[in-house]
Length: 205
Image (cartoon, rainbow, N blue to C red; front, side, top):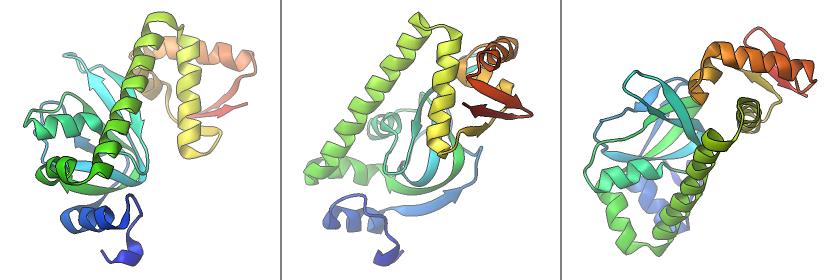
């Protein structure tokens, strides 16, 4: 990739090193780019699109942990990669994504060689830690209607549109609850004029 196409992620020296050492790849929506118990060989940095990171239980139920947006990476894959451990999360493409894949060895070396990279990684660590605290807080203290509205607002912000294309089952999967519970709460929210419902779409008012 030549310099005119490179996204400015870092200062010029590190940016050039990232594109020289890494590989740019495209993945369509719904692609699983990292699964639980997989070994990690490269660290993804999102250039375009978005990725959702989920945790699954033994029965295959999922709960959304956070989204990875342009200019961000997955701190969990970084930590597992540099420690040669397997992944504890599942990463799924939310909307068509373009990634810069950095080899784990390089990502580890840059901690020593580039203070800017260290700042980037520790900044991500703090951001993800706060987001995970938010997930724990929501599960422990918030009712389903608050969690559901918060998730819809996240998706609206992600897609930059108040119309969210999603099924009740997909929402249930990301929240770790039943589809029936989601459908019931969505109907209440519609009656309260918070949203309008149509087939596989929800519009935030």
